[in-house]
Image (tube, rainbow, N blue to C red; front, side, top):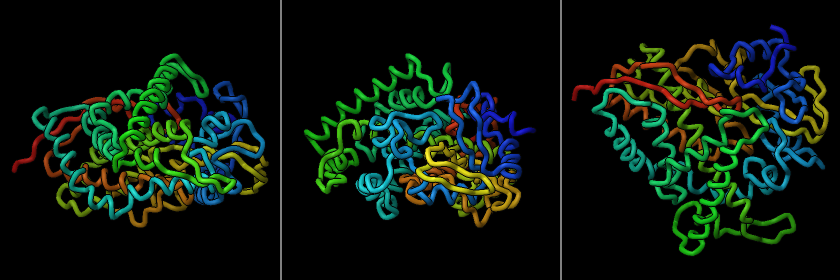
Length: 416
């Protein structure tokens, strides 16, 4: 392998999952590496690739140097490799904002996902999980992704947001269309992606208007009625654009990553039958298994930042204005941090994975995702056994998420 042969913007590289061999090579040979633009690279602009745990953590912890919005004065930025326009996506979408605005909006959301609140939500999640599993119990086979892994995260997210559960399938379809890259390359739009984005925005506008007229105790009612301090000290409501984008973000973040973690975690357990049997025999291991599933699946592969000032690491000079990509999925397989990282191990301890990011942009839904994965494991393994893959696991065409589109699985009911 040679550095000049690596192209992380060629989506075919991710067709069979995360390219671990490529990133192992980068961690050893070029942990801070300048990716020259290729025919696949959006904007025709290169970017830095951070592949080791140490450098990824340093960059993630230094939001002053590595902005989620943009470099000073740049017209675009954001957390994707391609530039998104500042004032529309970058600087407006919550995960593409910096402090203090990011922190002020985040405070509106955190009370809904505290450990105490989620402890009271656990019984509801178990009831929903039971219903999801009961729906496929008599079949002996299902598409694990769409019929099981997807259902719990999206149902839980819509419940917290105050969105009708019967709308979940079209919301997921719109989200899938905008996040996937079927029929397009990085930085490109299609008629299907534009239609999906428009439909999501129209749905959000109608729903948010209803929340204003008749607010409830759900998360969307909270954010529509909240005042947030601006840079001039004046408290104002979130703009219509901020609210619409926040809605789309929460739908995507609350369903996309966790469903992929559940699916890929189950695939890993099926591929390691001795650990699956051990977990099934002792469900107290589910907490450790959840953490290993998160490390193993690393649902968000990378996030991009923009350097606001010069930075040096590993003998490389990052200049102000450069794009910098933090590859969480590579950091989670760093040999200097994880013993035998390519070994799936539900007993791994410690397990300092970065599946939820780090510091100021640490995932808001981390506690909820952990709870959903653990409950799904416990309820699945209580009810079913003899799991097997009935066909190839199909992946979403993307280099941004560990996306799964289909996962045929067989199983058998456990004797009562």
